[in-house]
Length: 156
Image (cartoon, rainbow, N blue to C red):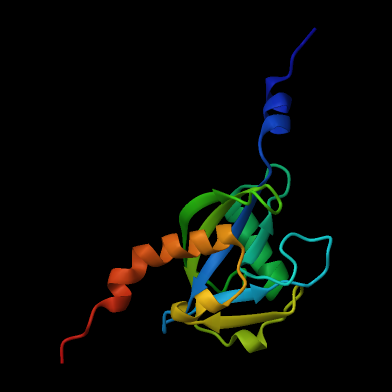
């Protein structure tokens, strides 16, 4: 009997997803208010744009597709960079790849296909928002990498 290792590896591999931490020139982060319906992970929470990877889809391809599908941002973000991977233990169970990107547009003009709202927030206001713990962890890891840039004073 022939054993298909490739099929077994795909079956045993965790489902994957990708999200984008999108910042603007003011250092604000774009968050997505999820629909408040019971059959989705984290209903009514502020999160990041992104979603699950399709079968055999690479995370980079998935985040471009998700940004385009959810908000028409697929080709508009600059400098997409991988930040970290975290598992959504209490939601989808997926292993999520976090990317960072830059975009200086008006979020109120984006064609939102899923969720309730998109809004830029300054990092100091995130503590008051209902955000899934793994998303907050990914954002904090990202902010730790840019904090020296954000706190540096410009000479007069």
